[in-house]
Image 1 (cartoon, rainbow, N blue to C red):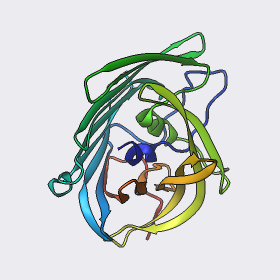
Image 2: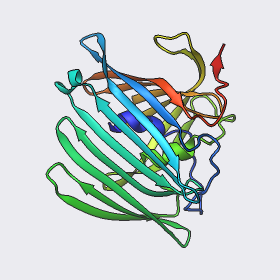
Image 3: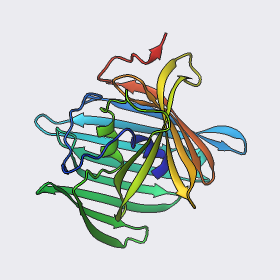
Image 4: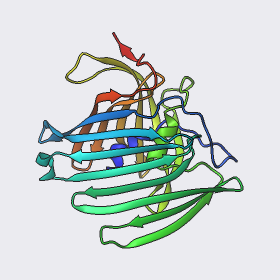
Length: 265
């Protein structure tokens, strides 16, 4: 699941000396719901694997509450069951306040939580991780840089302007995950036109890759396609997992804030 939702970690910058890093949301509004179909490559055959739904709401005078729920089908459950729920709360300036991930992956259940606090120009984190045996570990972390989790990063990053990005450009940022904060690397692959599977809809997209490094060698984990319009909505993901390849396709987009100008008629 970590790799599935890492498509939301794109297009971000750390702002030195300003830990809270406030920004203006231009990409989404309360009531947006994005639905995805999941597919796994099983013995050279693509099979339906389930669905994922990401929804965002806003309370008057308060921030945004966004959730991502992933659910594999009964057919796939026999091989690898996945029931994940992620929750992120950010204030009106897109500054992270709270994050929770409850995951049941392959019969292994764990909970990951992050509480954010901001004092004297620094980000203060309290992280709590509960493993599959029910054991709990608490850690703290502080930095003068912006720190994000998977969900709050997506919410913030969707509002960035990428007009000056160069193909091959690497983007680095810190992310709270489990009981630690780690550096994440994204590479901008350029622009491509993508036709959605099983439809005649074509999108102008920005393409990014999330990578890891093993012995200084680049290992691609996920490639994702983002609409080249003001919504910056993910429409396709290619995931390279330990047991094979998986893909996620946007099947429905409701409550979008901006016109879908990336669609090619």
